[in-house]
Length: 207
Image (tube, rainbow, N blue to C red; front, side, top):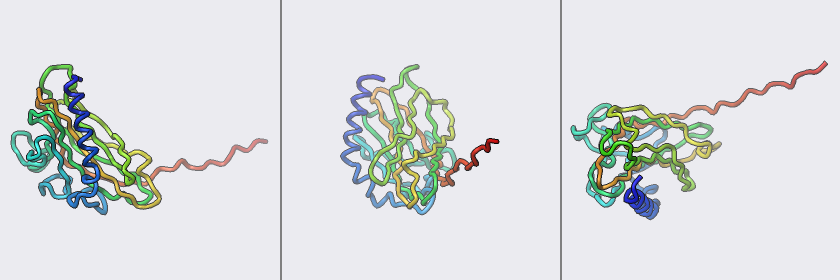
């Protein structure tokens, strides 16, 4: 990872921290009763809050044919614009009581640029109702294979509760200005399953 990339990521983190309140409370990121709103992006920006710096005019959710969607015509395209900065999309979801949330999405990374160098990164986070962020997974340009892959992640125990809670799902790409590699995201969904409890077994009887 280059020093320029590190500086870009630090700068992006500072901007994101300053905007955290706005990201969570934005009217465009209202909680969904179950699952996600517009997880396939076919309704454009509906249900999603987009944040981009320094290229604020970038259309992160688009139907450009340059980079295809996994299904339909629309997808989220984070990065790939040749600027040092950050792209981020978020959505707030509601986690039912006594359910384990499971996030699933499709991701495509086209391998480009110098081989062996991880100069681009995508971070997938979940922010708990109390504001605590949890990194769910990370990907770099080295993980690209020019095809969509399905990613399924069970959220940490911090998101399991006996009462209904909200969480903010976040996809953030940090870009190095020297290389352009978009992270394509499509068909985002949340499922909620029962927590599997270990069955109780009686103690062994000794005669």
